[in-house]
Amino acid sequence: MKLNLGCGHSRMDGFVNVDKFPSPACDEIVDLESLPWPWLDSSVDEVVLCHVLEHLGADTPVYLGIIKELWRVCRDGALILISVPHPNHDHFLWDPTHVRPITWEGLRMFDQERNREWIAAGSPMTPLGLHVGVNFRLEHVQFILDEPWASRERDKTIPPDELQFAMKHYHNVISEMIIRWRAVKP
Image 1: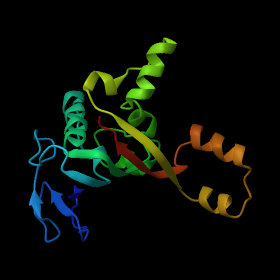
Image 2: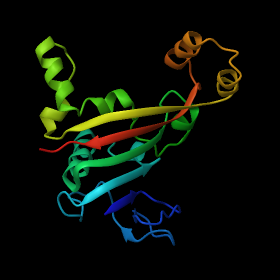
Image 3: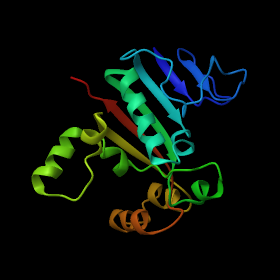
């Protein structure tokens, strides 16, 4: 099974299209903050969360519950594709329904291998994967640049180190992140 969670009006063929609100694109009406989810353990091969995760889990226990449910329903090796607005971009800040900034660094906190490395090194990082009982591996992050940064990168008129500095320190450089996350189960 493949899930398109928070599908809105964007139907994906070959997926179960799920949203809290009815629409012609929606196959199932599910409030993703109401736990547990209606799908069986280890029944999902792929999940798409396209501009959804930033709308969920304003309260930390609810957010962690969503992460636990995502891990529960995914099979070992299931792919989770997450698209979110970058938290340092106006697109994230303007929308009052955006309740939680999602970062690739934050998602790496659910990687138990990384958690064990932190513990061994005496790091102050919170080993969320171990605490919550989930394990996800971050595979790839794609940054979608806003203008004029995208044009400057494409035209090679900005040195890579300058662009990296801007991405880390300036507002409205990265508009969106597309993240490949993978469920790891014993």
